[in-house]
Amino acid sequence: MGVDSMRNDERLRRLKAVTDATLSRLDASDLLDELLDRVRDLLDADTAAILLIDPHSRQLVATAAKGLEEEVRRGVRIAVGRGFAGRIAETRRPLMISDVSPENVVNPILIDLGIRSLLGVPIIVADEVIGVLHVGTRHRREFTAEEVRLLQLAADRAGAAGRIRSRKLEQAAALALQRSLLPSTLPEVPGVEMAARYVPGHEFGIGGDWYDVFPLPSGWLGVVIGDVSGHGLASAVVMGRIRSALRAYTLIADDPAEALTLLDRKVRHFEAGSLTTALYAMISPDRSEALVSSAGHPPPILAVPGEPATVTVLPSDPPLGVDAQPRRRTTAVPLPPGATLVLYTDGLVERRGEVIDVGLDRLTRIVEPAPPELLCGRIIARVGLNAPTDDVALLVVRRFSDHCTGHPPAA
Image (cartoon, rainbow, N blue to C red; front, side, top):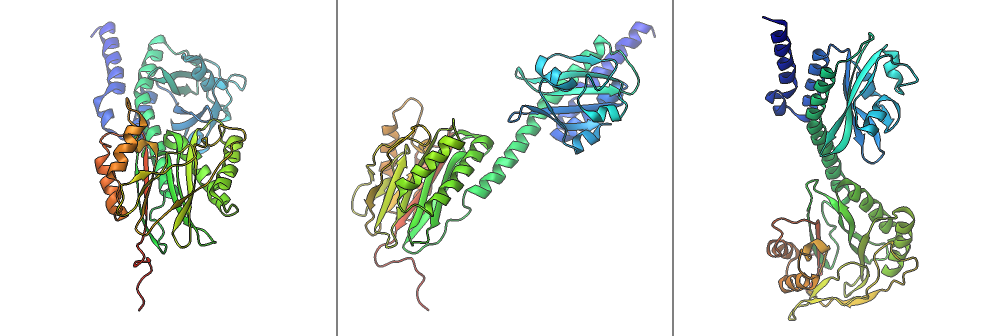
């Protein structure tokens, strides 16, 4: 067998090692580990590592490594633009260092391990740099152009796995946050019965929509529905902070407009740039009325026995954080016995290509005084959420009729 033929066979072996279809059947984390093992073997390297970009901090985070496991254990972070890996991420080009020194790398682990030469390439997905793949040797070495191409091919393979892994981690974090922020069960309180739904319009399963119900020390019942713009973990985090702040303000404010005014100051100072709407209602201890204030949020639907459901008329106050000194107002809404109040986020009524009044009318025709659990299911089934593009939160509160107070019967 000739030299050229042997070279071609070796080239094909290397290509197959990083494009093998069996890699696709591995879990994302296992795929990265297996890929690093193969790359280290094919390039006769002592170390191989993948660093992925944290989109929030714009830092490269050590995610997987062979021969550099300490880098992952320590959670090494490198700013984009700094050091060997940071320069690769910034320039989007391969980089080779034949003689490693503290002057050209910022990760002391590389120096401690005696790495002499490095080759790194960017990991690019959909024209976006999401990380860096690099290999290192303890002896001085000049990498060939073919080895650069092979490492870039491996990086392309790692890109898909890295994106999948990052999305899975974010999804897991978002779902954990959802479980902690959205009530798993609604409180049982005298005089009313309630039900709620949350329908994600995004693959992570959570966004900025939320609902909340809490008894207040005064005997009033606090009811909240809100919407932070956006989807995924970032919006959910902002939502969590706003939700917690509003709960705190409800303990010192006896008026919904006052609580939303305090919340507005918090949003303008600490959550600048996030568009947030919220509606806060306080239901009286005898459940005969609700005091309602809305910060740019869609109005509730009220259904009273014997009458058609109507859209509650509320003042048009601005969303949170968009006006320096908004004048917020509270409206008293009577709740006759058997009345049902439906609170929702705009994903329930907004549709592309139609004005919101059409969606409001569609929802109003569905709402009637009915058991909240039954009504929630009916609304979700009939408003047409086959493929929602926006998150939907729905909360239904029904006042018991006079002969049913909601207290358990006496023994």
